[in-house]
Structure formats: structure tokens, C-alpha cells
Length: 217
Ligand SMILES: [Zn+2]
Ligand SMILES: [Zn+2]
Image (cartoon, rainbow, N blue to C red; front, side):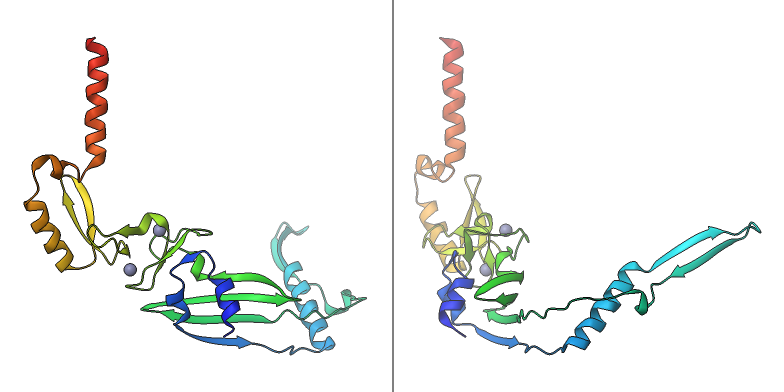
């Protein structure tokens, strides 16, 4: 596939280069219908959208159900213009994840119909900017589900990481080796440094002390 086009599709995805290495299939359907087929299709769409089930009571006090359908001869199409909007469907795989992107193309413009790369693969939230790619499983994710590992500072999705709490704060690891390494490092830390693993706790203690002092003085 056109590299320029692929990068357009994946702009704002961090680490997108990994995805470009993925596989893909593409389909572009040719213009397939002639004017008569288009008119017939339009007529059947109009008939469908105007068909209604009605219930009414006759003079004999009996309730009747009837489906009212317009007849094709009630519909006159005065003018018909054919426009070609080829629909593209791209399926590509990044690691274990499959993505589908489909859109209609017209005069250099693109109308997206479906774009799996703009949905967080973990929480299904819509993503515009700030999409992140997990190089471990191939998921495109939101910032909330992206984690930085504690020692190696690797970007990883929450599903691929190993989680463990240290001093009440959750820490993320890419492998058991990294966790093991940090466990040993943590064990050798003095207590004040261990507390540093949970800055939120430290801040709240400091704020509590400041508030306490304010009331005491
Ligand atoms: Zn998410
Ligand atoms: Zn992942």
C-alpha cells in the first residue's frame, strides 16, 4: 500500500512505524451499476421507506391491519446523476491485533466509514489525538491504558504489563526479570526512599501537616 497514505491513516499514533510493518489487504470496487439499475434501486429504497403497517376500524367495528406500499408507478424519477465514491476496506494486522479501516474516496477527499485505529482496544473509547501503540500486543490504546515500566521506562499497555504495588503505589513491569530486578533494588532502599515510590501519598501527608500547622498556629 501507498506508504504516504498509510502514514496519513495512522498519524497521531505514537510508534506507528511498527504498524506499517504489518500486513494488509485492500479492496477497491469499480463502478458497477448502470443508470437503470440505479433507478430501480432508488425506487425500491423509496418504496421500503414509505411502506407502513396501518391499523383501522371498519364501519362494522372490526379492526383491520393493512400494509400500505407505494407502487413503483407512483414514483417518478426526473433526473438521475451517478457519482462514483469507491469504498476502500483495509484489513491489517499488527502483532495479534486485527484492524479494519474503511472509507469512501471522492476527488482526493476521504470519508471514513469505520476506523478501528481510532478506538482504544482496551476501553473502546474514541481516540483522536494521543493514540498509543503497544509494541508487545499491537493494541492502539488511549493514554490512560499506556504505562511506563518502572525500571526500563518501556511504554506498554496495561494488559501486557506485570503489575505490583510498592509502598501502596502500583508499578508496571515488562517482564518478570524487570520485576525481580526492581524487587531486589527496592529491598535495599532506605525507608524514606521506599516512600518516594508513592509521591501522591507523600504530597497528601505534607498537605495534611501544613493544614495541621495552620490550625495550630
Ligand atoms: Zn483506553
Ligand atoms: Zn499490549
